[in-house]
Length: 475
Image (cartoon, rainbow, N blue to C red; front, top):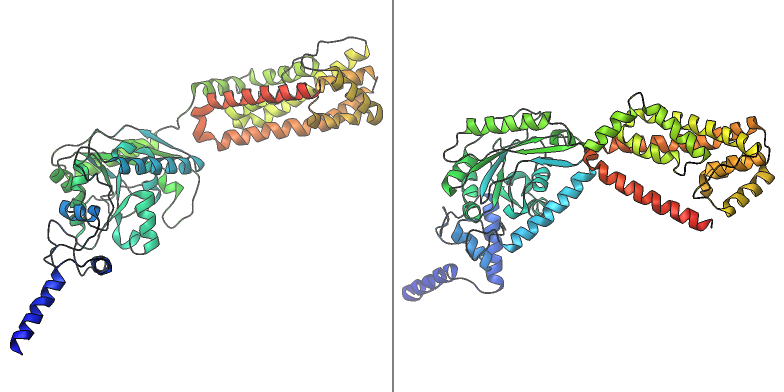
């Protein structure tokens, strides 16, 4: 009995250490991962783990390469398996997609601007941390060629499967333990750093409750020193207002200021001072603006703004082909606070011009009316014959210029008082609605003021197309 028993025992030992094929190996891999997450096994730092004394199971080439490089087999870093010096096409492509995703998302919530750039090659990015939106701001601001990896708290972002998937896929996150063993997790990214990737860490370890920058821990700085890459301080501003701790989403503009790289042995105090200075500079930075918008706002808010609005609307009611709503669209978007008074002034100019056009037409004068057609005049004459002065209520909707209604009303010898009252009701609703709508657009679009020239181009193109369709439809 002694011989067979001893022989059986040795066979069992060989079975437990020899790789198991097929489903057995996958089960062993899943069990090992569960034990790592539970803390019963530690992350490999070389060819062996600290407690198990043997290489963890793995089936894929990426998993085995991760163990050899000192990376966790269950953390997908996207490191190129063929060598160093490049993050790899797959990691870079994923980084481009993440950057596009977060850029679009943050554009809808107020936008994000970046000042500065990361140096070429791998680096450890250290930033202040006050919101979950910090990660989104960094992923939108950092270049995708660095394929950034984001260090995330293992006890929060990797505590449940759905959080783990979100963190990995949307943020390229990897777990960092906060209760011991976290530096081993950081060391697992050393080869990714040497391959040119950026590892983003928040040395405060947790989100702050205000804009102050807390004390820094040494892990990120030691990682950069051992990997032979610089530390890049980054200051974030606005994320605590966009998504406050224990608060809801608010609309605000984010700023990311990237500082000069720090080489060699960097102390926590030096890194903290650099990040705090950048964060203060980012918070005090003005919103990016367009010189054309500033000049437009300066003109329409000066003493010439109201006379210009009155003259534009007055001329359009007589002969000028461009309606006053076009002026309000460009002026109110540039200076939202002046929207109401500009709209009221344009309305007054339109009514005054319409009244003068009525009187001139009644006396037999014929003013030039470009971009109008005989069919327009015939339709307006028919409406006035059936409805009188109240026919002008159709003007905001049928596309026929107000000057055509005013001239035909004069030829029909309608009473001036009735015409003025009906025009005030019809033109007032349209002019005030358009002016206040574009003023609201200018206020909401404050973070995108630097795009004002593009806005003018789109506005002019849309107006030209719309005017062409209207004239063609009434030809």
